[in-house]
Length: 317
Ligand SMILES: N[C@@H](CC(=O)c1ccccc1NC=O)C(=O)O
Image (cartoon, rainbow, N blue to C red; front, side):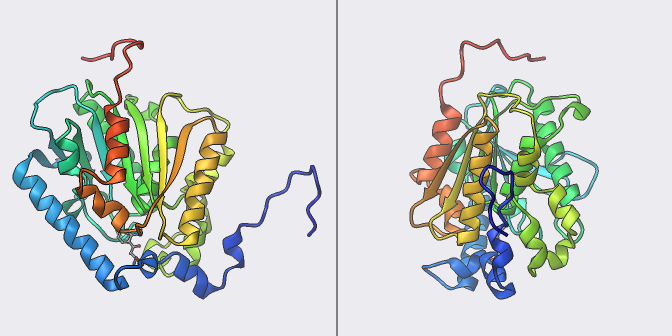
């Protein structure tokens, strides 16, 4: 109908006007790569992740398969800087793969450049669909963060980084209720890379076959929707949120990131948005293996920013 000025109305989401074929294409990241074919892009992504993980395990002190729960898939890997210390910043990475592919064992992209600068990196494993549901994955990531806080109570900040579906899981931590876990993680920042924040359109694509999400499941697990509805302000106003998307991500992915950033700003979060020049959905993350890549530098600049000396000393047992 006609928009009534001054009235409260919701604009129909643009994706609802797309044909089934177009919606499927918008939510198929590999169909938007520019320098190689779809298959080759996916193969290269796995290969670079695999090599980076082998290199990290061969050259860094690490704890592999640390359980954060009783489930088979509830394990994380932690990689440490050369300089041993209890008071380290931690970057926690949640891999992508549409909640149905990928593994912590092939996702140590950022480990070498970050640990070289004194940042510990944790790579989280979680139960993929169809074994895991969205609700279970969100709970698993929540418990993995709790586990790191309990294991390293003197940490100098926990920074959550997620890619694509992993960025969705990371974003859900903006809304986590920590009180039931009897610990509040020292989360100081989020790096949300090429993520999906409104899951509703996914329900109508082939990606939903193994996920088996109902519309209610999608709504309950959409940080975009939850943040719009939340009346709460961020617990820590100093917590930074960086929302990034690749120039060659699909228009729908780009729009999801822009809208989520706007909603974060309206909710009082210290959020910024960047579209990264000349990278696609996969290059944006595999280039984190390079210390001079723009996103590697953004992460390091944020994590290594001078610690706040004005605040109270960290409660450390
Ligand atoms: N079949 C998907 C695969 C995919 O989307 C993907 C693969 C690896 C890492 C992240 C991905 N996307 C979102 O989580 C595609 O069309 O590219």
